[in-house]
Image (cartoon, rainbow, N blue to C red; front, side, top):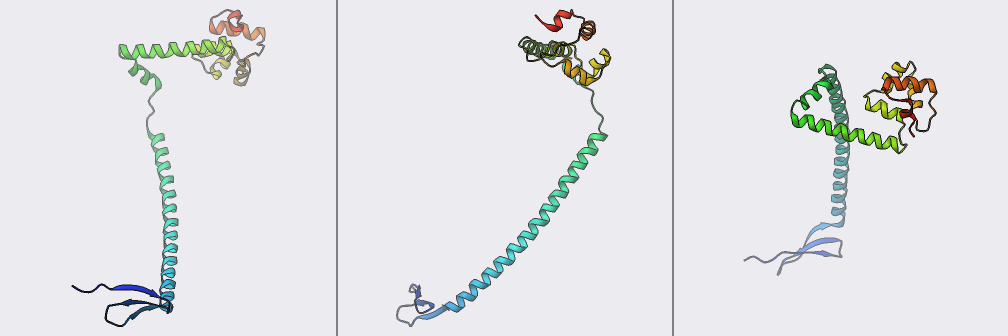
Length: 182
């Protein structure tokens, strides 16, 4: 078997290895090591610069691809035929289970709106608009006013003018008192 080679650091400014029975051989001097370290630092710096440049290119490519994807999504959305909500509802409610689920969901929603109206968190005008399936624009048209006026009428605590109350009662087919509560 061969003898073990022992690498040791000498304070004589050199790395040496000793082999039993032989003279020590210098492997590297400090000057050599400094050159190697500088060379490694230079290579490392060059690699970092290359990686940073590559990273910049990849980010630009990623941004470009994201914009292309958004563009394609928009084109697809514009070109796709929209499915009317009525068709989706009709398909969902075409079975007895679907119909029951639909009715239960609406009952829950009506109960929630009623609780909000009774607690004063939404106005009764808004409550009746919602249960009649109208948006503010539709109600404004029926009432002969602008949509912002409907928004004002629906604020909890707003004093609705008597003429508006009369028109709203006819539109919702309720009594004026139902619109103002107890």
